[in-house]
Image (tube, rainbow, N blue to C red; front, side, top):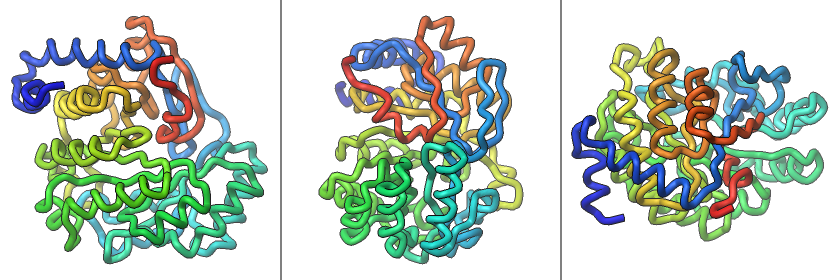
Length: 335
């Protein structure tokens, strides 16, 4: 796709985007089968008219730092860690995963708060992650933060199924929102390290992370596209109560669609998912519908409107109880 078309994803007025939306849909259909993948992992309780998961341990989130996060980013302040399973030692992590296995779950997300350097302290859990894979047969996906050579090598040894890295494309955002003395180039190095060790990388781009504004999203997508990830997850700022951003207007559905359009047109054969972190209510429904129009491959916790619109589009619907980062295992380009 030419640079002019990619520029247009962010420069055109909303009423001028239709040709790009139609092209994005066509590109998606050229590279992927006519299915939409809906994801219902165990991080959120949800009921819909078309599917209601029953097992809370089907694919839970586990925090290896409990509720602790050194950074205290402006958009989170560690709040999202509170409702996860807390397992702060290797022994506790393995015990938590045994409970998941015994309850019939298929895997888990292993995450945690960040250290001062922006990494998640996964290194002391590597042997446990390998045991969970080898002895319990669970799928394991991890939130990594920044990834150095040692961590990438450890994740490869453990055999994790996906390494999720939030890629931020603005040095200003890294400094003011994440409170980190880092650069965009550090995300490049993280993805390089994962690729070099053949760890399935599934980067995330958070739309509106700079106080609801679109600032570094394009650069983040350019970084991602250079590293040919197994999949891309697009999420959107959720203004959380108790954070400095609680009253910040979230990104609009069109903002989110612009990111999806750029991602699809620049990475035509990469599975793209609308992830679980996005506003609730009418905004979520509108985001879901526009994402479907733009040829998204998957949606986590889809709205009722997403289900109805997918049916109207003639898409087959495949429902999964695991994390949406595993879409690369669920979908085959050109199939």
